[in-house]
Amino acid sequence: MSHQHTAAASAVERPWWVEQRNLLLAFLLFLALMIYKFAFSSTGIPVGVVIAVNIVAYYFAGWSVIKAAFQKGLQGDFFNEFVLMTVATLGAFAIQEYEEAVAVMLFYQIGEYFQDVAVSRAKDNIKALLAIRPDRVTVLRAGEALEVLPEEVAIGELIRVKAGEKVALDGRLKSPATTFNTAALTGESKPTTYQQDDQLWAGMINMVQVSDIEVTALFKDSKLSKILEMVQDATARKSPTQLFITRFSKIYVPVVFVLALLVCVVPFFFVADYVFRDWFYRALVFLVISCPCALVVSIPLGYFGGIGLASKSGILFKGGNFLDAITEVDTVVMDKTGTLTKGVFEVQEIVAENGDKNELLAYAKAIESLSTHPIALAISRMETADREVLTATTVREIPGKGLIGSVASKEVLAGNLALLDQHQISYPADLKSNPFAIVAVAIAGSYAGYITVADEVKEDAKAVIAGFRARGIRTVMLSGDKSAVASEVAARLNLDDWRGDLLPEDKVSYVQNLLDQGHRVAFAGDGVNDAPVVALATVGIAMGGLGADATIETADVVIQNDEPSKILSAIKIGTLTRQIVWQNIALAMTVKVLVLILGAGGLATLWEAVIADVGVALLAILNAIRIQRKVID
Image (cartoon, rainbow, N blue to C red):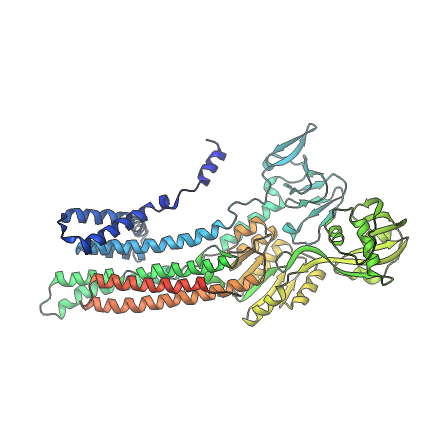
């Protein structure tokens, strides 16, 4: 069978009732046993048949737990919830309390199922496959254009990249000047025009025309591959957060075993009419009661509620442990382009030498409307007030500089300052220090003004920075964009700190330094260049709507609609979830300790213990449902 067929077959999901058939069969058998026990026990069904049905139900409900207990026992780990439940339920069988043994395993499996559903729902909303590297590349061989795997291209060969396609391999441009979008790779928000023989990197997007590139590095050695290796290294350095029940069991389980042993043995020295069988029975009852059923149900349900609320708010948590981790964050580090800014160019300012902004815009639109460059498109979208629409003729592009054409019988230049320098047109000296992308305009040989185009700050960015500050959380912006641009954005948002002109490894170093200082860091980004630092952070957050697949795959939390305010919402949801989970823990432990005392004194039967446990679980479920009803602003 081919690889494609294998992948396709594995991608077919089986119905839930097939995946959970053991749990479903155990539940149906347990339901039948309960109906028989309380309504038809006098029908004369042989005891052996009832025992056999209990054993079958116990097998379906508890086999995975018994297997886990056995495997951990082989590794020398005898004090965990799996061993406790196995010993307690087998003890219940020993004292002929079969249904209770089945109930203990069944409730545990239901809790595990809810946890699995919570995590799988989050993962189902996230792209499961990295698609940042093109699967095929067009290579020119013997005058023919052939589609091959990137791994099959050798150094020195020519590859052809169409407009809108990603560059698959590092190389040098052999076609005339072409514009590439490098935002996902470098963080630079402004598309860049590259000249013939300039170095290009895998991951850039060709924006204008078909381009030929001479390969300078093998696929495995490309800049993009190196970034993905950094992702793997960063992920290996980050330890996953353990959920409470696992840590708690390391203390709770050995204490319970010791107490059960004491319940059985200690009375021998103090009770005159000591009967071993009676006290052994109490010890087994103590073990059965001590099974943390309410905990293992209420805790996953609490996280399930938190993940559900987050999903409704456009936030995807990849596991309940990240709901815990995000509450401990004291520093939020964010990328600029696509996280705090829109990643879409808009006109910021129009400055006309003669004061007539509409006239300047009309001439600029006439010539820029014939270009597909992102900056030209931003100018073309602008509306001119009460003015006849001008058209341009004989427009030609000066690679890397701008456009020249005729508008209303006047020669018009629109481009960067190098274009005006080339035509010896003077302009104000302070234009060179402007941090934004400038489209300088000259009409009939004279400087007429300029238009600035920049990436817009998101509407909720400033408010969310204030919200972080109100919670005592420090905010930092790291950007691959020019320091002048990053500085302007940081000042506008009132950030605590910022850095510009950063490479991916610089961002990793900055965050690693924060972690070494003991800070709990959340990093939010969207580009491929952000993936390594997203993996390294205490909580990695991907802006998922426009984000790169590598970053989404690596992140612990995904913001679906790209609003930075959702980062603050995620922290609020994590805090709320943790409060409710600890409420459930406190409730379950209080009832558990009370019933344990009653059981040790012979005042509580197994059914009373099971009913108390089910009651606590029901209250925990209702408490967890409260999370889903909350509204997070």
